[in-house]
Length: 163
Image (cartoon, one colour):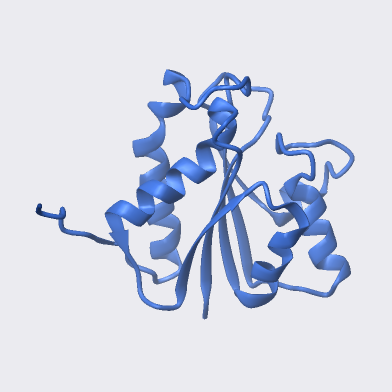
């Protein structure tokens, strides 16, 4: 079983970059067995299909417009995303529904795709996330660990680097 942890977003648009910020934090703080790939998906769009072909389980972290309060966290599966295909849930131009729909059209079937979405407060130009989203990082990290543990993947905390 191969697993991808995929962070999506544009770090130049404040909260829209939450997925990439989480991936950077995971890279600094965790180590995983070799069957786990940590991916900064940025705003790659349909280029991400390669990872859907390569991995049997995919955990995606992204800014998602749930129409809820900023910082709201929701967990979605593929069916949750594809049902409202006519609406863009992700804040990217080519959204996650487009990628998932394309993967199904191509016959790519992952064993599991789980999306952890965070409601952004701002997607205006800016390098910093808002406090409402930034304060949810510990909750996001814990959710990631729980989902991975359900897939029998353990995150081993890395020792701090000494200078």
